[in-house]
Image 1 (tube, rainbow, N blue to C red):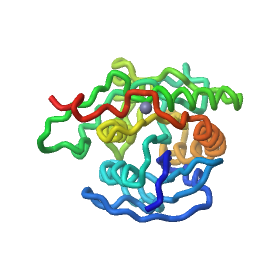
Image 2: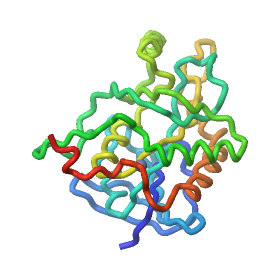
Image 3: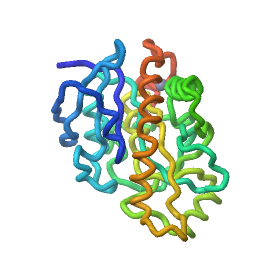
Length: 259
Ligand SMILES: [Zn+2]
């Protein structure tokens, strides 16, 4: 079995993150994830996974997040960079097209957000939801490339597949959210349960421009296309900078998470 050190999860419109490589199919106790691609970035073995399948045939509320994360773990991945296209909550204050979220509120209420539906009672620590080492590599990467990115933003994860109403966006703002998306939870929780590092970088779009005629879905795809090459530069540079040896605390042993 090929082993990879870093996994990249590609969101809608970001398929061009996939370089040439070897396609891999794996099975998991939770079902089969989409075909993954093993490639080399510099001297790092990387697995690329398109979150909702190569043809985006899985809507967010039916995406098999457990199979995706478990499949990456099966291939030896220890660290994951999630990519996404995310709606801005407070549009006037956002000055960048890219964000590297610093915290997360999960309002999705999804089933399948844990690998531990049965004993033992595992309760992971979420004092720092995103791996500080990968986050630091992403931030350094954006800085080195001269790319402006939101560096402190709270991502609110909601159930899909529809976009939020203006009143819902206002409510999320009051809760302390800066961005709203549908994917980073439960990925971040599932990765932590398996002792994997997870951090994310997202493309931003304005989903509630009342006077715009294009539907939000069209604006989302447009934003993804416009920023895909920028996002790719950040991710590829970060892959080369992520420390080989983990010094973060994401890989807590089971004895520290069982209640
Ligand atoms: Zn970590």
